[in-house]
Image (cartoon, rainbow, N blue to C red; front, side, top):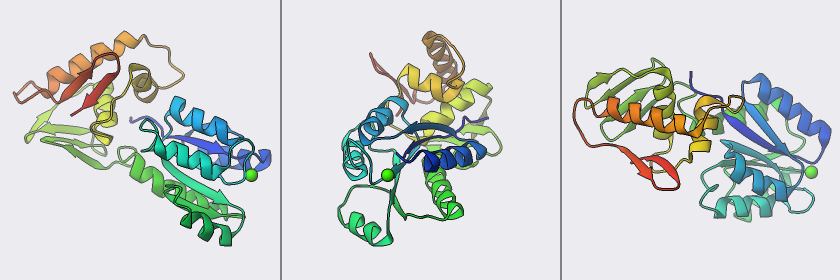
Length: 228
Ligand code: CA
C-alpha cells in the first residue's frame, strides 16, 4: 500500500501535544513532535512532513515566524500548515499577517473539528493515500485500484515501483533525495541501502518506457530523482 502520511505537531503544552499525537497515530499517521518554533523549522526540513500543526505561542520562535520561514524556504514551502491560536479574534489577526498558513484553528478547538481540518489538508497533500486518480503527462495512476497506464496502455508494476511512482506523481517536478524516497516508500523503520532506490528507479523507468515514449524520470546529479 501507499505509505502513511507524516504530521509534525508543534505544541509546547505537553498534554495538548499528547492528545494530538494519540489521535493522529490512531488515524494511521506517522507523527513527529517539537515544542518550540526553532525545532519546527529544522524538523520541517529534515522530516519533510506532509502537514504541520503549528501552535502560535511557542518558545524561542513564535508559530507565526516559524510558519513564515517554512513557507519561505524552497525545501519546505509546499508543506501544508495548520496554525493554532488561543482565541478566535487572534485567528482573524494572524490571517491578516499573511503567514502563508493553509488553515487556522482557534483554541480551545473541538478535537473532531481539528481532525476534520487535518484530514482535509492531508487529502490535498497526499491524494494517493485516499485513493485518488493521479496524472502526469500520459501517465495515469489509480491509487484505489492500484492500476497504472501510459498512453492508455496498462503497465504492471511491482509494489515498490508502484509506491515510488505514487510518491513522485503526487508532486511532479519535486526533487527527492534517496533518503527521502527511502523514508516515504520503504518506511522509516526499515534499513535499506540507498543504492536500492537506484535499482527500483531503474525498474520503474524500464516499465514506464516499455511501450516507447520519453523517459519521464529525471536523475538529478548529487540530489536524487524527480518526475518531469
Ligand atoms: Ca503554546
